[in-house]
Length: 300
Image 1 (cartoon, one colour):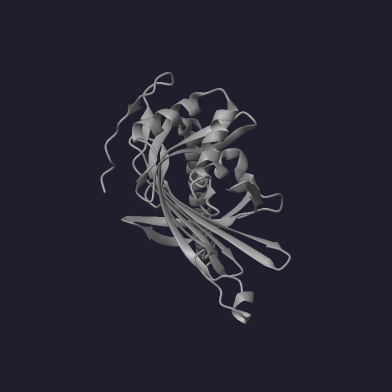
Image 2: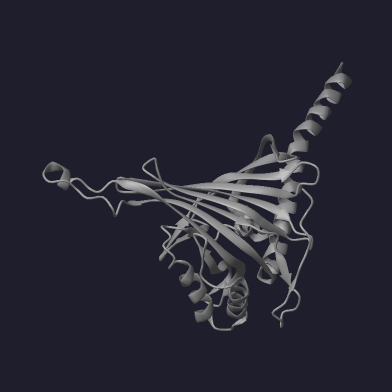
């Protein structure tokens, strides 16, 4: 009887250890992919399509005489579609921080400049030693009538580089499906301390504490999706940011964003929704040339 109890306890111990072992291996894979992304992201470029739906005042509204004239103009949703050349870069003033860079090609199907010219301008800006050239790329994107377009979510995986893992609490929360793949769900929450993620919207940059989920492919623990949320309170205003980033593995072995969805909800009202989609990423052929290595699309 004693041996039976010992055997049962031993088996229970193995079962209890297995989830923790899986979590450890998943976090190791996640941090490894984050390190590869940090190294390779500045060498990649893609085409980005942004679909934005945002609340704004109805400029065509004409108030009537009397009490109606005292009411604020009604709010309507403005929809915009921007197509841009898209890449990553670091800024000298923010060592170790990767920022998104864009050069707009079209706005609501109206051509701004040719793809070739946009790609050349973007590439020259990325290769420039001037921080002003890179910041100008960021500022130019904001001049196309967007409302609170939040950026810099494509590289959210960098929050989980090896040196950052201790800042979060992780736990396995079950299984799900991501397209054709079975996936494990890892729940994470930031430990107490200053916000780790900076949400850039126009001229504002807000630090945010994070909670969310990481989906990893069950078969090999490859990261597939990262979703997060952050709530900020100021006086009577509660602002909730939610975002999800779908990642795919490029043919040259680096994870890259395939789609990003961001929502800004203020006092339970959807203020802005940004949906970013990306074509398969290309890679610079050489650091000194304005050339790209074209790679085939991944099989679906």
